Length: 172
Length: 206
Image (cartoon, each protein chain N blue to C red):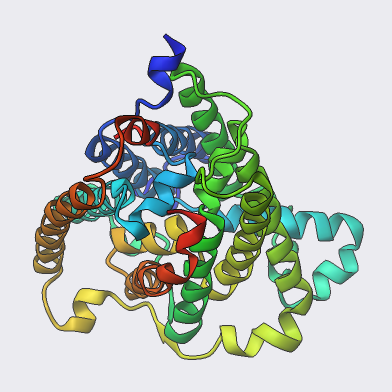
């Protein structure tokens, strides 16, 4: 049973529709888009604030957020905690809760993990400079027809196709 | 009329709780679509698995069309929601860094977090990387990034206004483009996977 379900994913258009409904609900109830890098940012600021409140207050990066209240007391953080719960629930239902490393069979675990770390670092810097990630900048931006969302779409996916050739050995 | 929280129809704790449940639906959608599997995500750039394009476009345009219609019928006032400001050059530059991050790391921050939550070790390492990147940015913000991040400010720009066409028409054109891209994506995927074994395709859940 478990084996059969493991690689069974839902229809992509249904998946997209569900996420689209979640996005509409986010705007309807809370006036916010779906995001994730914004919540990461809050975790980072909360940790800096816990170590030195003065530093966090004076830094131009975190000052305004720390002044407004506890950095974690924000919609995006609760939303991301929900994402974790939803992903775990779905993985449990489909029998996919399992320790494993996802990668192309042609590369080693070590290569995959080093690449994952470097890729993550690039995302960390890129999201802060670009004001959001695939969900917060692009998807939520496209939902309200914002120019910034479409610039993000062009840069992330256009850039992806532009540079894909150089990293093909990681995947194919 | 929505948005409920900004217009004072629901309390802050209710709003946060609703945020949690909306997040659950989002997380379910990402996991059930296969986005904790890094190979499915990277596949969109190499043509062997175009699921990302289908899910992503469908989600964004379902929301765009839905919100447009809701606004038209007075169910939501879109002037009261969070609307991003456009800073085109930092977003373009940040976006290119993210593109590299996607090709090298095989996740984006949301899908990486889902992968980490469901036991994918590469997802956990990716999330650690994102945090390292943000710490680096936070501690070097003032000397390196601050001036650039706030440059090329354009305000709140709606792309339909910017192109000089009506919003409904823009959404309609995007839906046509999306449907065309789904057909093209299926054609590419079939071509790329022509000589692949059944096991290989089953591994991607195709």
